[in-house]
Length: 51
Image 1 (cartoon, rainbow, N blue to C red):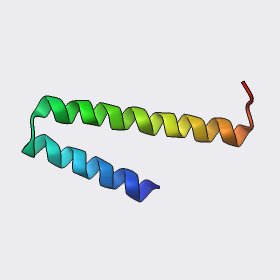
Image 2: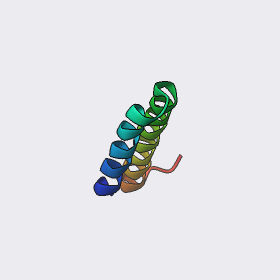
Image 3: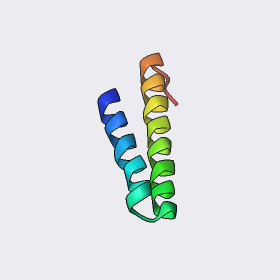
Image 4: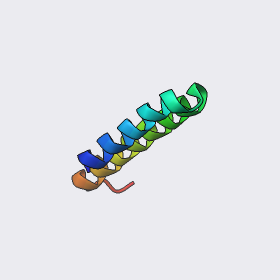
């Protein structure tokens, strides 16, 4: 999982130099948001929290 995250980060950081900076920044924010959602879901599922 961590290798996949590092691969995504390297692809997005590379796109900053090869594409429009604004688009790359949006993709970076989306990726960070998805990472936080995955971490939050993993933490809640590990703690067995039922909402």
